Image 1 (cartoon, helix red, strand yellow):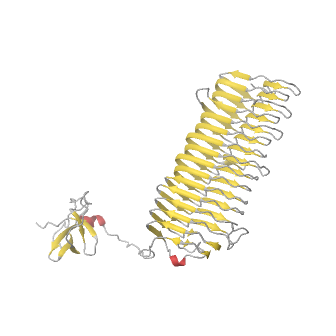
Image 2: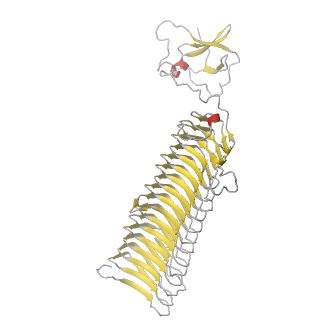
Image 3: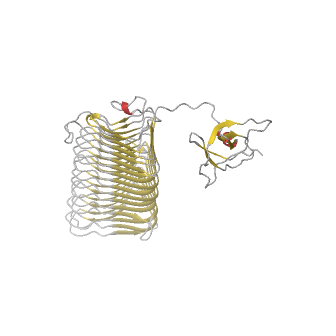
Length: 586
């Protein structure tokens, strides 16, 4: 439909009328609405507005047009007016698909898919387009759910899919099943409440990849479940199940409550790569408790000031953060944190990494301004801190509420479990509490190395001293449990500029027996690592290591010369083992 004046289809119940309007059904292969065209089912009286059904379409295009169902102010409806669209392709350009209620009755649901047996090929929204369900301020009834099934779902240029309530009734839920989902240039998936009713949940199943990128006109691209400042409703939860999840350029996933109730939880499953670059995962509450953040990913990467954080500013505690990954990397001022700026305790952080945890110029932090610092538990095969990266359970020097601790705020405990823990470049492990009980620090490892680390110096300020600190100090210090590494700390010498040629050394060696014992001789034949089963040390001792003089040219082995395998492992008088073979002087 085109034209300068509004044109379209309408099915309605007039004001003061009693009765139901009819359903609008369109069986079309190609539907194009433009220039303020519309398809609307509405009720202003006592009766149900009809539903809208568009089916068997190959393509539906809306350009500055609307498809909507409405229960208007003062109207009473007993059944929702739903919108069901079955099409291979749905394209919205500065267009709207909405189901709302400002009267008494449920807002309609919106369902988009291919047909009854398959999903759509592509759904795209651009130029501020929207798909939404809404309980308006005068509305009394539950909001409609939104369900989308498509191969590809693209939102661009401040477009939105939202379910919200401003009246007396819970917001609807948002459920998306797609192969690829992309949010760009300030586009959002959103559930919200600005009333005393709860916000809806968001559930996303994206089998291939979910991409969130960019911002526009102050609006971040992302996924949001929120409550407004005057609301007493609970925030919605966000659940994401995908293979690859990538956020960049201020992309955001946020469950936030600005009102008096709690924020929702965030749960993310990413079987492949989960990367954040200059982006945020946030669970925030102003008065209530913040939600928890759970992430299970294969490769988890935070870069360029990326953040995963649970935060509160009231009397309730911050939520916990629980991350599970094969590898986890934090780089370039990235942060994983649980913070409390109010009287509530900071939340705990639990991280389980199958292989390596690497932090470079980044921080793992719990922070409490007026209460207890949360605990940090990190388990990995290898833990490496570089370039002033810290693990801290931080508390303020004083606060109005110490959670029953009369001596001040208490630092949270830090437990690190790994095969190796290596720290460099003024990276610190700090559970200090200036006016309270320092947290306990436990390093469950056989190998711990901290550049410049000295156990007796670990108190007071740890930043900017150009050494690694493990600090549990306070008015009452916590307990530091760490392996004894005094034999190696601060005793490493610089390597010579000219390193030994180990290939040549091994290839030019053999063991010769003497009357005084064995001698390790450099001869000119070759050597390789022992074969399986030849790792037992020789039963006789060897003597000194010395070279034997050789006359003529070609005595020193060089690359390309024949290689002779060693026969076994031989023990020197000082206990060292060498792989070699017995010399043959025939």
